[in-house]
Length: 113
Length: 113
Image (cartoon, rainbow over all chains, first blue to last red):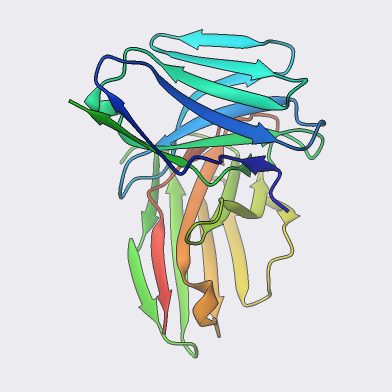
């Protein structure tokens, strides 16, 4: 049973607008969340993370929001750029330890110039 | 070479073959991982090594055999695989077992015929 879910397989956004990628989780013991970005023929690269003691973490154009009561997190990219077009994976970790990351299936973001 | 490298990038093997996947990290990390990504499924953790010791085996069939001769190198030995083992195999590393952020290689696309 998937503990981390990304229910939107794809998202298209106009350049300059905001991209919002969503992720839901079921395990209330998760206490650390990460977003990875993957280009074709490359491995996932770490983008941004958030601890469960926070509800927001910002890094340049990227902001991650965490809603623990709803078991939901989102990644906001603003403004979106064509180079942001990639597959974005949400991951979570908790009681099983930092080594054990649970990933979602990914959302393919396309930023239209 | 920088980051995490994997060879070969593509591999086609018959069910009776024996082959090995190689991963090397140039980041000075002490933890290394094997993941499997099948089509439309999330990344699945297979094995974890911390300081060359295996600390996680995620119920992986014995036809997959990992080897970690030192902190920089990780192998995945394959024998008598099944067609359903066809997938993208990703290697990752992190500073140590307490670090959440993992750095991924580009993966080996494996096809079992």
